[in-house]
Image 1 (cartoon, one colour):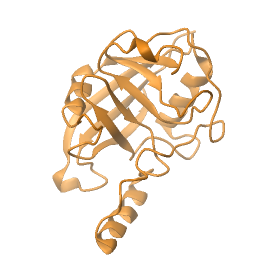
Image 2: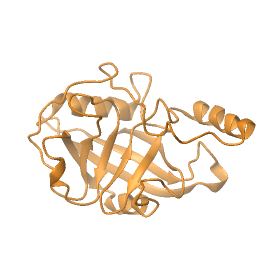
Image 3: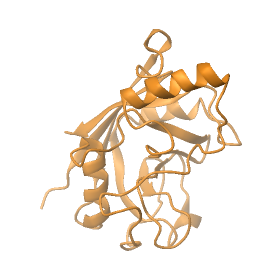
Length: 196
């Protein structure tokens, strides 16, 4: 059984939000460990392709902490599509500015809103590890993070299901827009995602 590979085309500014100020950062290619965490890998793969009618394209990295990780996958309370981004931009202009309080609180899996932790066989061994973000045990949805360092203290708490195989330099570029609080200095957007 070969492990699938998926990609993100990432920009700072975002072509959906504001094409004129978008700065392309590059492509991140990730291998999904279907051999070790098949259910979690399939969830992520399908969210990359958007084949279930929802997914990562147009969403972004809403929490980036340098020396730790880059978190994304909130496409329900953030922006799920180009249309949603345009609508949200209209709202921002009309209401002066939307609060960022809901940023990073959404998402859903292909199995429903949340699904159980599959296993903890893979570990947070270093930069490039792909792992599920959660709100506690058995609360996996669509949110994920890419490690930018070894994060062994997360072993047994977050399901590792893949790794970056190309484009770690792009992850490092994303990391530079982060802060200790996790807030990004520019909107970091997944302009396109899919299966390789």
